[in-house]
Length: 262
Image 1 (cartoon, one colour):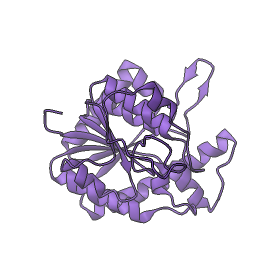
Image 2 (cartoon, helix red, strand yellow):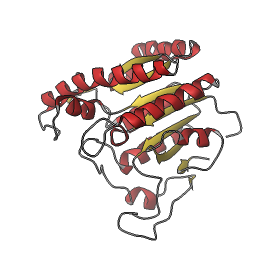
Image 3 (cartoon, one colour):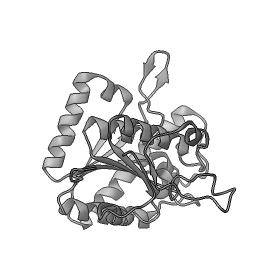
């Protein structure tokens, strides 16, 4: 981009927030809070789109498997969202930064009035140096008949929010390092693709689904998010969220992960 990066949406997935054993990854949450608070102090406007409500709900109740019933998933999301925001609030306050919660459904961004109210809220929070933390409103989201309120996952949500607020860039922190030219789990010679100026049919066909029992996203949804950003003339960076301090390197202009867009 030719202009200075100022407003950035950072999305972190469930796999980065919940350990393989189902426990909450407090180290990652702490590092993410420290990093975003530091960047916020440097004058960047940041919006965090955080998954993890159901995963944290499972951890809170000591459960190992995600239930199949929708109402049980929604109940877990309700429990987990409160616990997740409590952790975020505590960690960010340790770094003298305030956060706010926004729970969205597709309808909120689809209808002009509610969309504008949401954007006004986010804009006001950013002016006050408060970091909005956005998640889908899972306990009330439904996808029935002609009434569609759910996003496919938070990859889609993050790109929709980024475009709506005219963010310069979307950074997706995932459990993978980048987009590869082939599946790195199957091919030892797989190479990272550092830049994707356009999404070719070959790239789309190589994508696969979610690899964890806690999350819903995968490379397919990340490519959809990238397509949304690129259509709006913006960039998306996909990188590993294991150590969120990697954001410092990205903001310093280093080549990290895969950059989608020109």
